[in-house]
Length: 291
Image 1 (cartoon, one colour):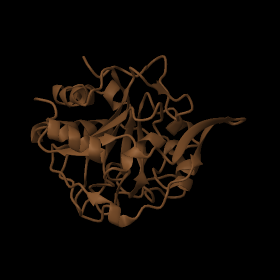
Image 2 (cartoon, one colour):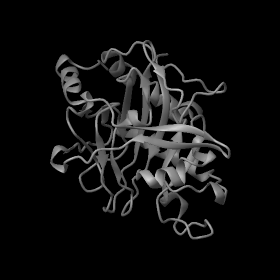
Image 3 (cartoon, one colour):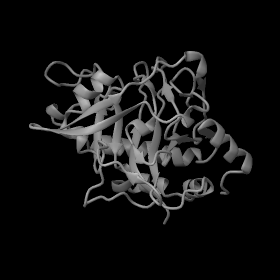
Image 4 (cartoon, helix red, strand yellow):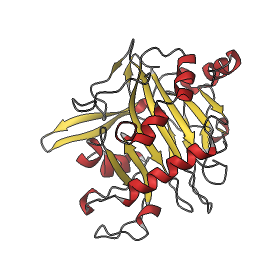
């Protein structure tokens, strides 16, 4: 496929995001969904590693940012769960496959299906048309947005968690594997909010008991009227600037909202911040996107 048109490029530069329908076929989406079910079928999670995922700051620090299971997940395939799906002993209250919030953060490296999609011609052409010359893949996630209780994602900027020097070098690629609607929790954006920098950062800190994370700064309270929804059909793709403010609502519908998403960094003229929670490892340096 061709890259972005001049009109689309200008739209992305102005808004900080761009919705593109029909990038992947329904069959390609179904292959990804089938593959994630195979991964789930082989899932083995010790009870002490059963982490409930949250985007609320205090819960993030308590349940994710202070656990090795999360902090060492950057080069692995690991499982994170919705709130309220475990009893006090860590046993599942629901079927495990209906309890997962997301799987991350290195599907792009370890699974052949997701690796192929990440490096696909469609993605490469889009990224090239944005002017990225040496993009590397820093993380990937499969997000489930489960029916009836798929968790809210509070307003945030991706560069809060994936920081570069200088800023403006992170790009998110979000692929809808099912229709994303107002009812099941599509993404919402504040157009143009990518031009003012970031207001907070999650950083890794070292303590006597090991690694943990902390936040520097605070997230502003955004006026709800500034957000616009971006419903998108199965197979569509959203390009997301690392500093644009976005969110998604709780899924109260009977339909899931599966998505595969990954983040890139333009490595030609930027450095990955050494106090980011996620760091490349000798076993898995950030791989180049272009093949």
